[in-house]
Image (cartoon, rainbow over all chains, first blue to last red; front, side, top):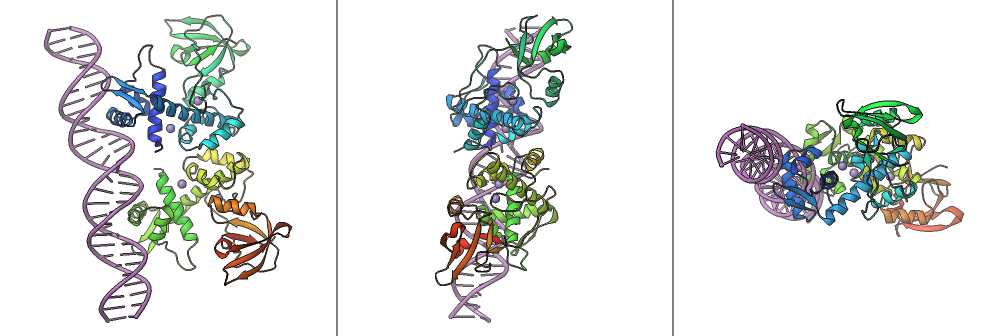
Length: 223
Length: 223
DNA sequence: CGGTTTATTTTGATGACTCAAAATTTATAA
DNA sequence: TTATAAATTTTGAGTCATCAAAATAAACCG
Ligand SMILES: [Mn+2]
Ligand SMILES: [Mn+2]
Ligand SMILES: [Mn+2]
Ligand SMILES: [Mn+2]
């Protein structure tokens, strides 16, 4: 039986939650899952137990949850649909990159395999979505790249913005207005612990200083 | 509060059901609603009472149900989304006209107003979908055309197929394979009561004889 | 008209998903 | 190492949408 939208959202949240877990930790705490999904903690517990019954996750009471192989594949396919839809909406439909996330959040549950493959083809089998997030393949495999954030990258080195890990519309518009979208050249000039900020030199030598919290959401790569 | 997919499907089914009611009858019987939605009759009764509470329908026990003005508008907007999506999938995505109905059945509940308006624009504000069904406007108004079926149209008169009122994929493929899609020229040569059939002359003077049941699903207009 | 068939409604129950608040376990820190 | 705090689970309840089967109303017919 095919998974409900609810189940798909849980699997996706676990997948994304697991991926930002500190090294060595393999279990996503229920509290984090609950807040990622904006549901009560008790609801998460109940649902995760049901997911464990279906063999989609492993659940260790009081410790957390992790995807099984089959759960991970399902989650990756939801993510594939989400990201292909986002890119399609930007490239083909001409929507802005800050408005496609919410749209894709719904569409990811209803677009058919046929339609998704058609989008993939029209887009030329892209590897990343408008935010630089990697698009899993039709089998759920994903190319994982190790990217530095603006907090961890080398200083005074030519770099390229590669990925933005926050879907908040206001944040995305801010990024865009300062020419910090994926693909833009960038250089970190300075970091200051005390003021909790990072100074960036962007396109046309424009300077801008942003907070460390925002800086951690911009991933960069060598040009 | 926005209507659930279930509510949207009920409203749409009532809308479509009302439109095929015999002249003078204004109430859709619960049995017809139930079978249109493939649900148990008792379920229809319960849900319709709830819809009546919300002011979307009027319900007369043992007689049936009819949409209120607000219910009708909502239903028309669902239909607008359904039909614009169908046309988009055919025209832009290159899907076949026999596979878009099922797809649209899901998408109609999740595509946003913004996305729908974008599709409308890309398609040049079309008036009909791939099956010739009229597309309601953004306010839910619909242009109603009185069309004859192959059972009621004049004989030996040049006509054009304008609408196909059955979404069954096998039926649609049959129609297409015999060049009877909307837009095709056609002429009814004969009707036979006894054999329950209609003989058609189509493109390139090709002849084909179909049953009365099938003939009633093809609507035609003067060229 | 009265009996039978058909359509509709009512009843009782279930599954999926959710919450608030109480109970419990684990972590923290004095 | 015990008290306190934080995270998690359990409990009890509610909503939405559904079904099967019993009860009822309406329609049909000889
Ligand atoms: Mn979602
Ligand atoms: Mn994205
Ligand atoms: Mn539908
Ligand atoms: Mn159609």
